[in-house]
Image 1 (cartoon, one colour):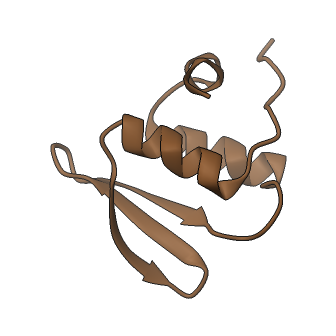
Image 2 (image 1 turned 90 degrees about the vertical axis):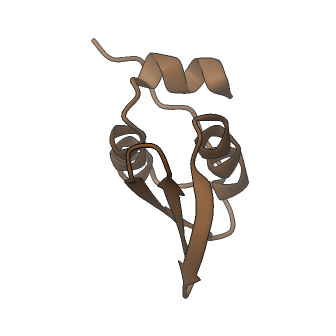
Length: 75
């Protein structure tokens, strides 16, 4: 059973992505695009107010190539 996803804002998610080596590349509307230079992995983070939806957060965690447990530990 996977642990429940925490309630996270876009700023908190950006902090985790930057710790994993992702760097801001550009922004398209309200979506910031981060790239990790060593493997060209890409993650798109919606920069909306409030908390991200659970399904969106789960998809972004998969794009970060980490588990939910690792994500919770990095918060």
